[in-house]
Image (cartoon, rainbow, N blue to C red; front, side):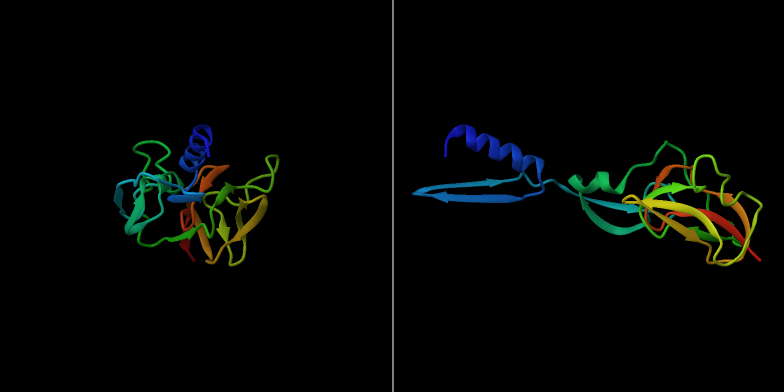
Amino acid sequence: MDFKQIQELIKMINKSNIGEVSIEEKGFKLTIKQKEEPVQQLIAAPMQHQAVAPLAATQVSAAQQPAIGAPEKPGKAVEAPADNTVTIKSPMIGTFYRSSSPDKPPFINVGDEIDLGKVVCIIEAMKLFNEIESEVKGRIVKVLVEDASPVEYDQPLFLVEPA
């Protein structure tokens, strides 16, 4: 194995999630180890901001942090829901849409009355459009997510005042 091959191997390992590689050839042994990232402990209070799902004392390496996300805009925190409201949350990761297509009206608006099973939005995940149905009967108080924005699993989407 020549020096150029070793350099290319190091570059490929740096770009991947591989922690360690060992190669043995005719009396030649090469071991490449990724530098260990310092482990950071993240604790996010529930409803701290939209882009981070609530976590409870979870350890996440620095390489995994982009998957969690960061607040979209500083200071744009989700308000704590009122005691008399129910939160409709995202059942999956994907892109949130309020209507079935750009030229169609939204499924629901603030002030609309909804029943169990009424489609409230669509979440696109891996090129599949999933209709999200209401699990509560009531009146929409607030839409918590902008149209065509990414959402995380269990992220609050709507506040509903139960009927």
